[in-house]
Length: 125
Length: 147
Image (cartoon, rainbow over all chains, first blue to last red; front, top):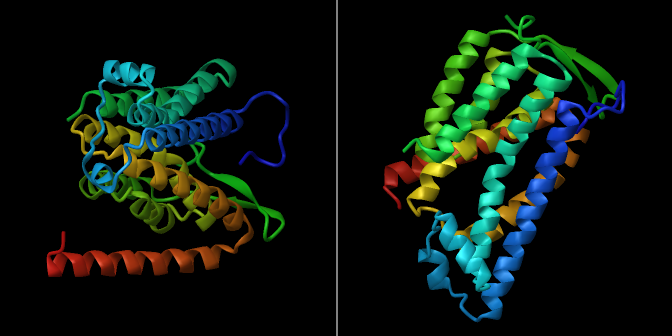
């Protein structure tokens, strides 16, 4: 993922992005797998449920469900993790561009991308 | 414009075993295509990767590997922006997400490793073939009125 010719050992935008993406994706998959295992362990898995049981985005309900070991809520937390991974990546890039590379142009571009993505995710529609 | 944005770059091609330099052109046209890509992705949920790769290759003249890699890199961000809409409406089925996400992720890891070792022309041919299959499928579904 990173360039083979790396001039220094300092974290670069590419190396940190790669690290955040891999970490986010792997941890989200693990959380979702745990959720599926809980669902099977409780014997509440069914094709009917797969087809009709929708995502409930309210964080309160998800946290409450996780406390009670509900598989579906654990999966929903994993989905949240998956959705926020690329956003965390853009956030990390904008911080690196601004404070490490001191690259004003790209710091502004990534920050605008971050705002637009968050707006899309949280408000629009 | 490309030099102001510092878009001209280079990548190390594993198959050719050397650094490849490239220059980027056609940015205004690409912006238009990208805008359309966003709308199409929102309507069809197909991920605008297909359209983005076209914009990269046809308008911006970026090498295929750089194009697919860039598109792959962006998709998560653009998809996240659209995902909120679906999530809030309960249109996402969590129990379907798990197998889909996990197997797509495994496939994606394998795909990137394979991609690095393939030639740009082979990748372009595979891409064209897939585009044709997806296009045919959508056409057939649209005409027969499936769903």
